[in-house]
Length: 401
Image 1 (cartoon, rainbow, N blue to C red):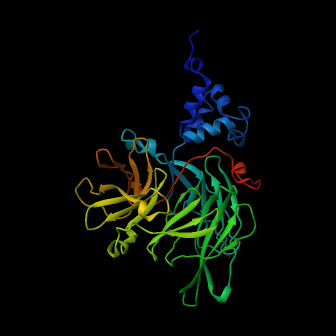
Image 2 (tube, rainbow, N blue to C red):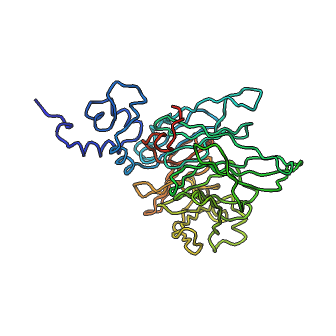
Image 3 (tube, rainbow, N blue to C red):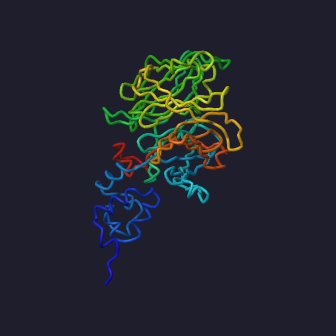
């Protein structure tokens, strides 16, 4: 009887190979044969889907070591979340046949503070350690939830608390999810403004909520400009949330461990002319370092800076100068948001409202994925898929799936 490949290779090799599969094929692989199922899963074949989402601890650890970042995409206020795996989907061999992959369908909530009883229009806000955070923006309750799209589990966050101090109107400017490694807690940061009867902001404030708790905590010393928006694209490094502040023209950060704010100056090379064009800048993470891109309008190129020593302005280094010219020779305008460094060493960027682009630093070429549906301006958030259940990640029991 002829031996199959599965009979020849070691279990360790098979497990290593399975951890390198994208999430959807990984789930499908467990239905291929008993060997694949036994290597990866807790439970028995034929059990419910919930049991099928339970992976062995040793497999989870190996998968976490090999997992690469993917992009979660939400078009408008659609309740369907789609996924792009840049390591595969932007490869020139496969990009022509690419189709968006549905990944997670958001639950429907009924607002408790509106008469229309409309279901939610939850919007993807940010990610943290494989979890995605959604908020029902501009709604009466501003309900939000945390989810693991891989296991299809989610947890509702306590409704926001409204403060009518000084008889001013309270308006939420943004909410984001973060993680404190010291306390092993996930937290939500909420930034709000108080406006007068004419709608003019008179004060900024902030609150934090430990996920799973029932009370919001006021944050003191909030050095925030007045231009912060739900549409800002913050980035997270080691439990610290960073975003560009359009008013103060620098980078503001919030440390979820210390529950405190701080500021980082932009490169000292930037004068008043560059700072007046901060709307053409974008921040991200490249190689574990805070990065800044600036699409220079008086020249057809994008400058990409990297901060080698986090918090030290003098450590900003202009690492790449990307020729931002289309195949037709026209200069490309708009933000280029750095997303990640691919295994090919190409730098993946989101050319806002247009396309995904890859910059090859070796031959200094710019390649366009050709994803024309990006003209529909989806919300794009990078995250690294996690097989850990929401119960174990958040240390809570009251979650849904």
